Image (cartoon, rainbow, N blue to C red; front, top):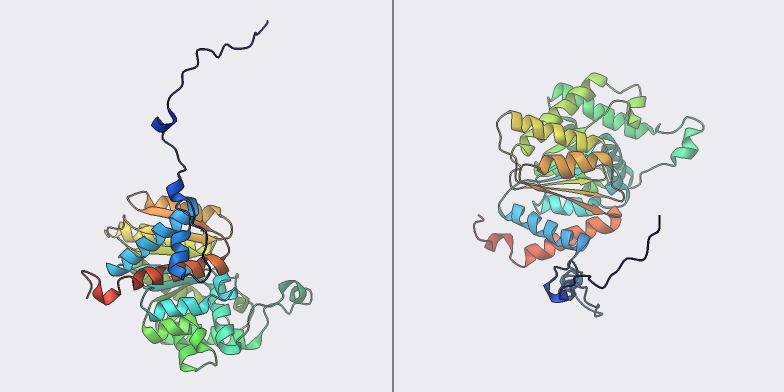
Length: 325
């Protein structure tokens, strides 16, 4: 078979102006002028892709706050380890986070920072001789707080640990997320997989108390998720536990008759994982909400997001917003 070159003389064209284009100059970034404000920097970002998502996430967060809808922070331990506790505490004190949900590792780093001002051991080095995870104070304090709070006081892990840390007047308690939640009466929910945390290796660990406390926190989180219509759920640095817990809490709330359809979810991590993609961003928002990814380093993305929300709120203080009390 022989194939002569195709004849292109009959190609049909159209005016460029008539075509829909995805990139336009009005969405471009603006060159930075030294000495400018943070608000000017945010306005200078291009209006496309992740930068456009950031602007929309900020506006949705501000709208939820103004409408007095829940803004839930779900988190792993990494945000604490990269120094974001002061920002989270600040948002809690401002009343901008309605509840916090975290995994067991986050509890450990939150306590060690409050107690010692330092955390995060060299796992590879300590694993060689079996000393990994064997810090006395961490295991004694946390296991004791869980056992006493869950068994004696009938509360969940988050409240049990937070109240114990706050009452103990730990040197750096002002940086503790759990102690701040306890002080302010904000739900702090801890979701544990037995065997995943270093305190489970110690003889003081009470599996029944840990399980019961985590179940109580799941039901507490579900009560917040049940009111999430019009609100926000952030998953920051949890690849498995929090996405799974959030999905079950949402399903339980809907099963009990709560309308939880139109809300916003945001996954923030330095890579995109499977479970946050399906259990936070896509599946929960199919009934009318919207899910976002902000992919990047927590120590850059999260402070930028927090600052952008505060700047947006400052344009019209909460007390002056229409419809707020």
